[in-house]
Image (cartoon, rainbow, N blue to C red; front, side, top):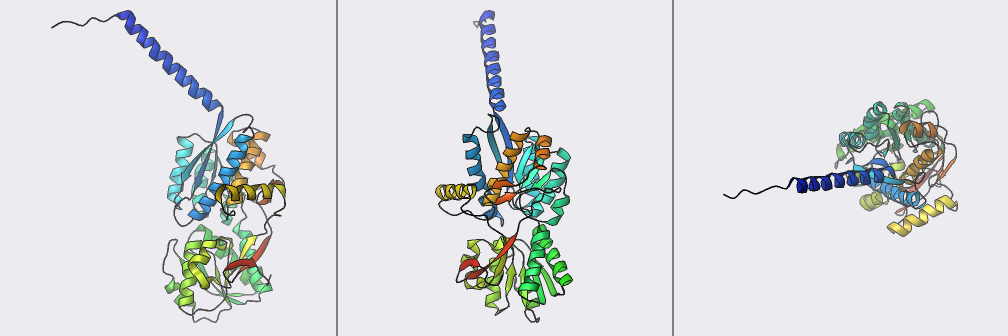
Amino acid sequence: MKRIGYNSSAILTVISIVVASVIVFSFGCAKQEEKEIKIGAVLPLTGSAAVWGENAKMGLEIALEEVNQGGGVKGKTIKFIIEDSQSDPSKAVSALQKLISTDKVSVIIGDIASSSVLAMAPIAEKAKVVLMSPGASNPDISKAGEYIFRNWQSDALEGEVDAKFAYEHLRWRNMAVLYVSNAYGTGLKTVFEESFQKLGGKILASKSFEQGSTDMRSQLNKIRNLKLDALYMPGYPPEMAILLRQAKEMGIKIPFLSVQAFDDPKILETAKDGAEGVMFSVPKPPDPSNPVVKNFNDKYKQKFSRAPGVTSDTGYDALKIIVWAMNQGGTSAEEVRQQLLTLKDFPGAAGITTFDKNGDVIKPFIFRTVRKGQFVHSERY
C-alpha cells in the first residue's frame, strides 16, 4: 500500500488559517455584542391572557422601532428577546430563568398576569434583574422587591374605586362576587369586598372559577336565588364572556360590575347581548391630542390596522421608560433601578407615569358601560 505523505508546512498553514478565522469570527461577534443592548420580555402570547400579551408585544414593537431609529441607547441598538409564558406562572418562571442564565439580560419586561409576576419576582430579585410589568395589578406586587416595577395601577386602587362606585354612586347594598381563581382575581376580590363592607355594604356570596373554565353554571346557581343588587366580576375576557352568556341563558338579570380586563371587544363578540349593561372601571385615558399619545395611536393603526388594545400603550411605555433610565444612567440593572426610582411625570402613550417608593403608579379611573354592543362612557358615573 502506498503511503500518503504529509507536508508539515501545509498543515501549519491550514491551522493558522482556521485559528485566524475563529479569532476574526469571535472578534466580530464581540464587536456586534458591544453595539447591542439585550432586553428580555416574558409575555402571554398564548393561553387565556394572550390578548393582552399580544397587545403589549405590538406596543413594544413600535417603541423598539422608534428607539433604534433614534440611535438606540447611547449609540447602541436594542435587541429584544421575547419568551411566551403561555399564561402559566410555571412557564413564566422557566422563561425568566432562560433570559437571565442563557441570554444574560439585566432588564426584563413582563409578565402581564399578576400570578406570573409574583412567581417570577423572587427569582428576579435574587438575581438583581429589573422586572417591569406593563399589566400586573395584584397588591402584593408592591412588596415583591426592590427590582420589581410596573407601569400599571395596583388592584388596591381599582378594587377600592369599584367598591366606592358600587356603594356611593349606584347605591348597591347587597352584592355577590364571582372571580377568577388566581392572583389577579383574588387581589381584586379581596380589596373590593373589604372596601365595600367597610362602607356598609354586604357580600352575600363569593365564588371562584378556574382560569380556562368553560362552565360557570354551578357558581351562578349558587347566587341566582339570593336577593342581590348586583354582582362583581373580576376575571379574564374568555371566562367572563362565557359567564355572561350562561347567566343570560339561566335568566339571571342582575347588574354586573367588572374591571379593566373587561375592556376587550372580543367579549362583546362572545357574550353578545349577555354583555348588555355591564359596567367596568378603566384608568382615565390620556388626552388623544397629546403629541405622544397621538403619535402612538397613529403609528399603531397604520402598522396593525386597528386601534390599540389594553396593555398596548403600557407595553410601549415600558420600553420607553427603560430606555430613558438607561440614557440617564447606565445599562446595568442597578443603574436602571436607581433611575426608575427618580422617574417623575414621564410623558407616555398611556399618560403621565411617576413611580412611588414601591415601584407603583397611581392613575384616576372612569367607568364604561356596554350599550347596544358598544363600550360607552357610563352615564351613571
